[in-house]
Image (cartoon, rainbow, N blue to C red; front, side):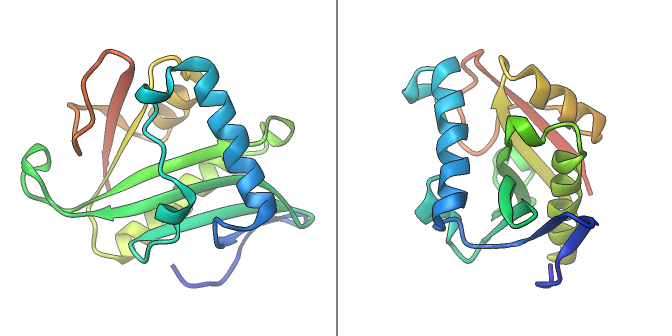
Length: 167
């Protein structure tokens, strides 16, 4: 994805950014706090800030009038047995600040991440989310993601649900 911002409206811009900025880290901390309220820490599959800085990760931030209000990432992954040997993009760290929800930010982030994966020649996006995160599950289903088997070494422990989409 080029570094050209994706302007949602006059006040909201989505663009690639570093995850180690203080306001972005505050968003990630809010996401982690939310996840830790739902699951034991050992059951959270969190990609840390340092991992988000890796060259195989696109990390996007949505800013409303300059304030970070949402984020999401796509990580390029090599093929594995659970993907029939095909490389895939994994959607990670999706979060919209509760005060900014209802504006289509999550949908815009997913569309931008998927476009980036397509540009990279990746034909499938996969994700793991928690079964207790019903808002996330509904979002992914609305975006065309379908249930699938576990992948990427995630345990099929009944707490996680797995989705995939052909790009």
